[in-house]
Length: 374
Image 1 (cartoon, rainbow, N blue to C red):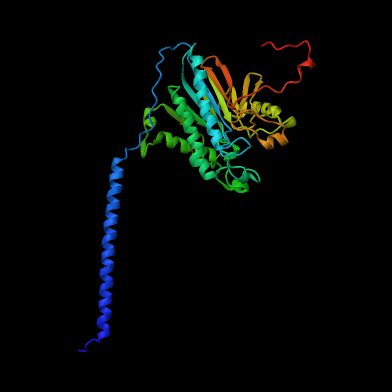
Image 2: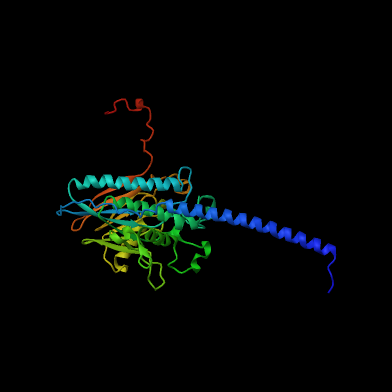
């Protein structure tokens, strides 16, 4: 047997010293890790579990005669769009204001008759989208991912929860808008059901209600909110661009309004008449009211025996509309009350601006015989 040289013994001693040193460091690291884990465990135990989304109490109204249903038409929120005075934060603030004003106006109606239930009609363009028009990427404050999974569903849930504080039951119907289109110029290659508005509606439904397969939220268990999203689970590929809903004897046809082309000077009154009269026979469900958005100009039309309402938008200062259409809309959404036999008995264009002011007057000396009455 060969005896190792002195140098080899010296080398082994150094190696043993290094191993001992590493073992000491490892023991210190284990102690530190154990302490950290214990601290995390104590922290988790101290934190209270998240409070489930509470179910607002139902306002007890025993009256039955003359009961009406509120109709909330919500569209063209364009969340994540940027204009000189509009963005996601401003949009969500105005939507919360809409909920507050719905409550106040409903209390006025209830002074005369019960209003227990509400229909929330989501008529599209709830979000701004991406690649809808050239240069849009410079005019949004969030991408489509955030719009679909965060901003739009949270705003929808905000409004529904506000409505639950005012009404016993809320039925939600959602149709798609043109800003829900995905894929830019290649969008024609997608499944026709693919639309970001529809996705946001479904995300909002899961957020508020939960899922039957994985557990319902308290609101989901309460059965106070119901949903109808055309194209949600249908197997036949189609755009499912419209919906018809009934309140008593009255039918409400909903579409976003991008199906209607502009008319004289960009105002599509002739286009609405042409489409509406065509839809009377081409859509199998009978309807009395046509509710749309898209044009951002609060408008009421009467077409013989049928009524048309074109919703406003929550946005303001649209530079494109100002330049090309000479149109600047006031942030507005539509609210109405429907009797099951008599139809719409009252309607409101709900102003969501920060405060409107009269147009600047000319000097009063131009009208020497005119005096202010107040």
